[in-house]
Image (tube, rainbow, N blue to C red):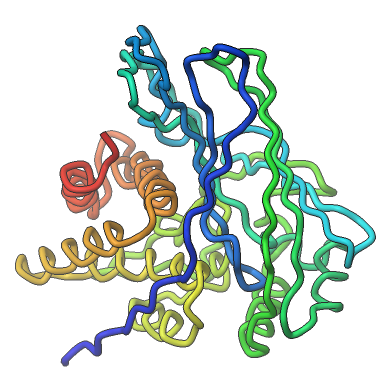
Length: 347
């Protein structure tokens, strides 16, 4: 059967660059890039923080945080407010219960070189906060043109700018999502048991990497936890609401408006195209399509999506019934990550 091509319309918007205040005579310029600044309700924005050597001298022993998966996310305070809502909202970091150790590699930072420091992504809102007072009031009072919200970011730099508190601000326009998609989000929220959300009474808890078994994804006669293919914290959709077949993911992607929520669905769908392809040529074509699509994205969004993919290594390379053996998808996962490393990883 011929597979219909799913038209891809890029999420519109430019990367916003915000330079943070720096110490006097500091050779390092610290800045944050954000994409996009105009979204639909339920979308994700992507943030990456960079350090740049603005001096004419080589800086020795500068930590390269950007190459560390899972632990490369930006810790800090992220607060959203608007005059249209009485309260503000703070994101609570998600914990996975997965531990890993990575050596912090120190490299020289050449004059004019910029290096990725940390990155993160924020959902507006996370599905688990659908009924949180801030988001409910924002949703109920959303005009057709959308609402401009004030995003305040605060964190401490942990390397050469140690002790320097970074504070930046950015306006984010949140637009109303099509009614059918809002209804879909609400359905996913109501269908999700609270134990599958990352907070209990507002407190983060560790989440075991075990599925409910209600929506495991089927590939070549085997079933897999959907969170193997879905970004950390992204439940739009995930267990137990996600499609269980590749065709279901194709239909879901095609039904959504161009947006970062659709991009996240596409990331999962393209992975399933690759892992489902049995013939070598079909597998190569699917792998190349995923790599080329990632290449087409803005650097901030691409960097975070690649980090998500890299953080799944343990789940592909350790079978649930025998941790010394990879899953049936382990070899293909390694091939995919090698292709990404070769063509896309930031130098």
